Length: 228
View 1 (spheres, one colour):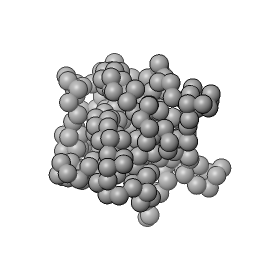
View 2 (cartoon, helix red, strand yellow):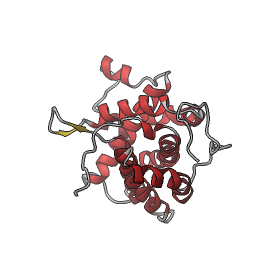
View 3 (cartoon, helix red, strand yellow):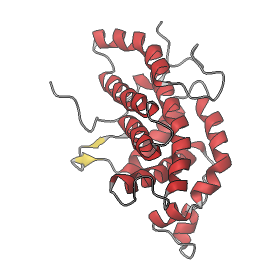
């Protein structure tokens, strides 16, 4: 059933905050995806969702002890949605800019009011991530630096909060993918675990918003378009 993206809510809106699994999200998206594939509509959005779902499904297969791997896979799932190419730079748009644009856009298309509820829950532990010594050091901040101190303030608006949250999660993942921390190491364990909890809820919510309503929008050029 096709749903007008301008309607206030979809019949698939979740009734609770428990994240939807990749299999459920894929089944909700399938009829619309197949219909638009035949009509050659929203191809970039379809590619983004497909890539994101593959990474989300893989992350769900991880054991409870594979936190580092699971976090990297969840970040790849998110990156498939927020990453965008800059023709001006001839390179992917900087992560901070890409996630900030994505945060505004996904909240704009959230007709089911999923994000305010989810972000309200995540705000409970937000001070722990904003003041985490590991993440503060990664951001190059010190309490003596006034601009850094302002950056440590938790934004009141949802899009600013979401962008800041994604920035901190991205820093944690960046350390792992650079090999700047041991696999399963203790130094960044708290940051990894907090990032994992947040991203495990955010990614399914992003996918839900985009597959229900936001697929009609332009999410920016793909960083790696599929080859013909």
